[in-house]
Length: 219
Image (cartoon, rainbow, N blue to C red; front, top):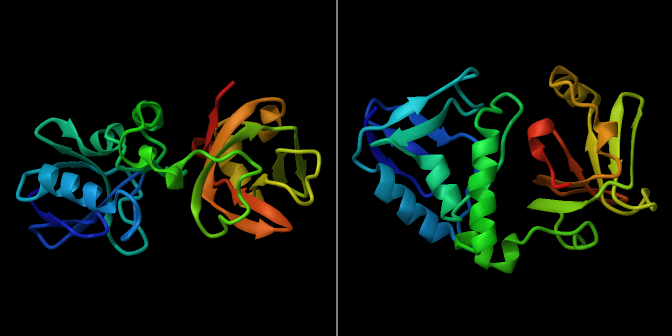
């Protein structure tokens, strides 16, 4: 498909009138650190060029946009943006493809402090660094002190004070995705993991995990 341009949100406008989003990426929003650099890099890769779109089902997001892995002249656009530190991984359970490769590209950029990773705004947080992060997308790394499933919901606790400190939760509906992948969240207990998502607040900070792809086992 021919790409006319990429808009300010990173959406690709295609010559046939369709729109496509870069599946698996969390791009910096307008006025966030790195947003201008991301737009410049993405436009340089795709604007006015022929792109190959890999679109596994479900093909569209709720806005009717194609959810695609994008390739231009043999270059995988998602991997390039991640490798240059211009995006973060945000995988959905319905599209878990390429998780290993995408996390590897993100990790390499983070280790080299390229792009977004040079800014403290994008730092990987510890569970006790979330006081003013409500409503933001964060990556949190820490030791799972305990893990339990109660009334179908899983709780990954990162301290003994589970009522007030950071917790990662999995809804009964999303537990189906973990079971399908043969992942028992209780097995995360005693491990250092990295989770990502929007910080909500229930007594303390909380991230609701939608699938195993939102969890990286560090050790």
